[in-house]
Length: 238
Ligand code: ADP
Ligand code: MG
Image 1 (spheres, rainbow, N blue to C red):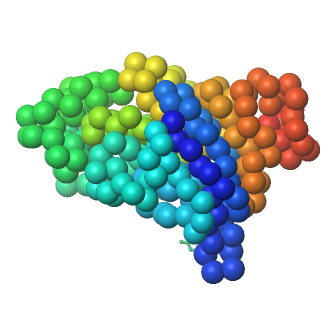
Image 2: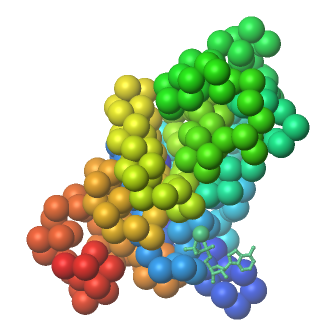
């Protein structure tokens, strides 16, 4: 599991996070929901050491992230953002294979993993040789997920990954993510603004206000049935 223990992060005078504590259970989907600027991106970037706490600690299975080598750590933690950022002059298969190679996999293994993960996210073989701009936004996002999975992570960080995808495709991507999560036993931290998406995919839903203040955390059905504050009621529309 991932544990945030009394984590604070300051940028000059701004407290992006103040005394944030949370346990993220293994092989479950934890969803962070909150307004812009509430510290969601800061929280997930602490897991792969892109951001370090000003105070407090973040640990994975009892090991402090700060004591881990950043490169080795990022080989076990996949990261997906809204801006997929595929390399435009490389094909779909090359994009995914390249990341697996960078993660240290031998060429053949990397290619096999890339093929397997592209298939898993629903990209058919005819598209492997296409270039990113020849794909729809939804397909590009699938490739982005495949790319994160090709390193064979056990943790997946997803920062508003489906924000730019149209509603029907978005539903499909959510369904497939849940299936893949179960199949691979992934621990996922997923950031979203969308309450429908949050309630649908979350095992644990965490509603945040400014400074990463936890308004409420728990099963989505519990939050909907018993919102702890007006803020939670409003953000969940209940
Ligand atoms: P969210 O993802 O919920 O929108 P962020 O984690 O990106 O929130 O940001 C939380 C707060 O920290 C915001 O006030 C933001 O302006 C500030 N912040 C985030 N990153 C930086 C940075 N690199 N430098 C200065 N301030 C930052
Ligand atoms: Mg953010």
